[in-house]
Image 1 (cartoon, rainbow, N blue to C red):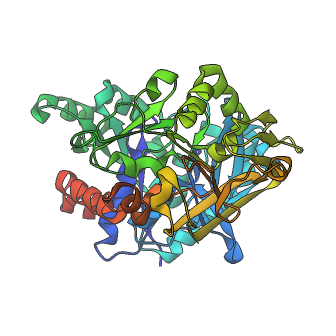
Image 2: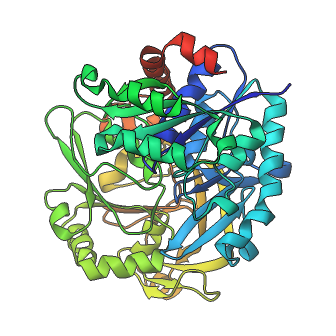
Length: 485
């Protein structure tokens, strides 16, 4: 079996590649085809735990995880062989075939290509051999001419797979025709030949006003505009690449406000998508104390650089906001890095993350280990109190990605300051019941958790995928989608 490869390229980051690729995965899967997603290299701190070699666990970008589910395929590390997890503005952790590679992480950017390309090519070839269709996603723009010689994610992949490529642009930002033409024009002839269609994404208004732009663009490039996709705010798919909607909205009267601290190295923010879909719940991304005014719950999310984000929290004055909220009895939830921040101290003997005093809301100490814990888990909450009492006995499935190892502060425990361990080694609660820290990501993706906390449910991922497939079928057309493969 040799799969037909189709590739979604973009004129920029945020053009809609991940969204469109996910929709295509579900569309082709429900035609009875065996489909797999692929992205050679992803840069994101939104990661999921999936199968790796010999029964082990590994990491891939969240976008490819969702695309695999949309394709009704079992997610595995071949679908995203290289994942770059930014730790600072000039440094990223390199995850190769699901595992952190310290040597590659220290290797200059341009020197990595030759070392990782064999893994990328092998992963893609294996997926091609096992599927009818492989839906490939590019990264950023394929016309980054300064990086063309070291490209391993865009046109080198397209040429290797002889993929049929569509180039998508965000028309809402303006300059769409220039973006499409300029991207096409900067490609070498053999790469231009693989671009068979342009897609205008996020269009608002009267589509007839686009004329004669598409016709003029086709005259210049011999490439047609194959579709115009309307703006769709509430499609339900989590955002990719750390880009999230800053506007707040709620369906119906606001009954509860949840403020999630949007610190600089936020990770796994996609796990909060379900909260945006709960009627009566307003989700706020908090970057300063004013954003937390009126919040019922404050959430400290995951972090790729916990000590640095804790320093940022203090610089913004948000540390005092969180502590004061907890002292007033307000609900506080810390997830992974957020859990670590709620403790007494961060201790870093190996230079992994950094040393720092915590917020002191839970008598816990976190020590950063050389090795990263990466695994999926199914656990049941023990008896909880206060704000989180409704979670008592709830069975949840999630995933762990962390270097820190957390335990009770021994001296504080000896002095009688106790806390409630509600999941052994994974979750703790203060005696008052309003502060909860948990290592497990994915809580709000559990229907049982949503029902327990809010008495209702959000659309399932499968419902979201079906909606995406319906949308592209309506606006791109069955005939064109079948011709593409």
